[in-house]
Image 1 (cartoon, rainbow, N blue to C red):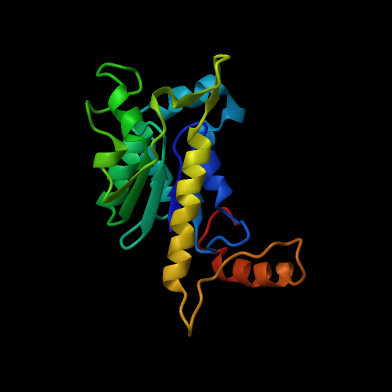
Image 2: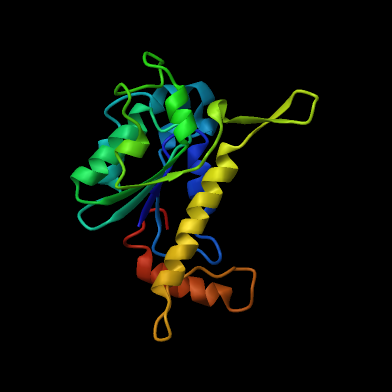
Length: 206
């Protein structure tokens, strides 16, 4: 299972479910180094809007037939996220998209973020989860005019819930889904070492 967050803050939700206690071990994060905010915030925005970049990321991580790709992006309309969804499906993967329908609809035609007219992550995904983030990714607090961004919290919650649900479905009386342990808990290092030996050849980030 691949998890991708094309965009400056979207990848934070991806990192939040990777190599974490209780999360599935068979999760491969697709993190686009060229959209990391620490590599230049404005550069990140420019790159996520630039067409032709998603195919390389999918190829580098070996996305192929039968894979599952979870793609999270609050606004769901930039070039990289659209091409990643389309490209993953063309490779035979099942795409689950996470974005806000309100945010998608609020971005007008002709806006620099829009890539293919009214195309959005919600309509290039096999399954879509509406994160319900308000347009602009902010919510007002109290009467003082204070605002707070919501997308990272909403994205992280949605991804974590999906993976926990998957763990529950994969676990039965005779088998259990493999999950990471805390390396700060007794026996955690041993559990994680066994999982690293099993998955490091398949999960690039390990």
